[in-house]
Image (cartoon, rainbow, N blue to C red; front, side, top):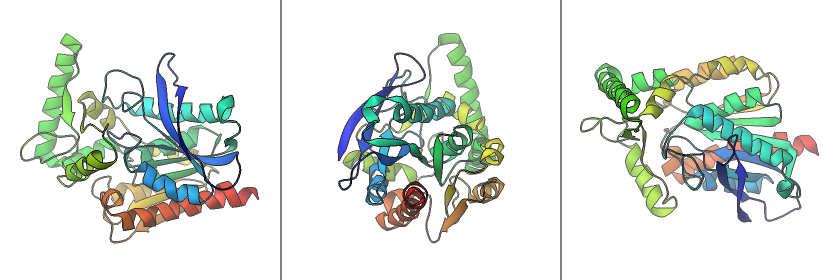
Length: 311
């Protein structure tokens, strides 16, 4: 069953809107996994496909739009501040924990967080900081944003991106107006945030079919925010929360050479690293057989720690 819900953010007057999926069998309150997306995601973008596997495991899914995106409030639009996004995860945890409208449906003692790509990093911080989170699933996460950006662009491309960011900062200070940059595209023809030409066609196909509110650009300031993004300090703070990390073999978008060492820095012994063979970062969006493998691993983790551990 699916229904639209909303709850307040940390900022009065800014509402977060979400889709709540509950299993078709059994009775609530169900354990719940809170799901937020990556760069320029809206809640309809690929996450409902993952959620179907979680529902089959007996776990509800709360999929939300960050502020500045999709159905949620927040200006400027298409602005990616990772700390506001992390705060939105925690507002979702607040809603499940404290709002009467969720009491009959969701169990506040069995909350998990799931993230993919950029939000795969977010959930590591959320799980480290919030003791109400009982399970973490981090899929193809960004660990160190500046490193990812520099490695993805190479030295010459990174010079061009830096020049654009610096010019935008000047213009934004003088005019108060945000400039914009494409999410992805061909770096030979334009400066983009993520210079991987395979990304845009996949996102555009998803936009045409299931996620019409997706817009394939962000504010240029969002690039500054990702350069300041580093999840490594939070890894030793994950002391006892069960944590699954899913990595794509050879991932050169979120850089598996940063993801696997990051997994090793997570302190809890209740952790699992799953390296998906013969996969890529983007095939977990575009190839349903690859999505099914990752989603099944995540569903099994949720079942183990949110269902079986409580029976």
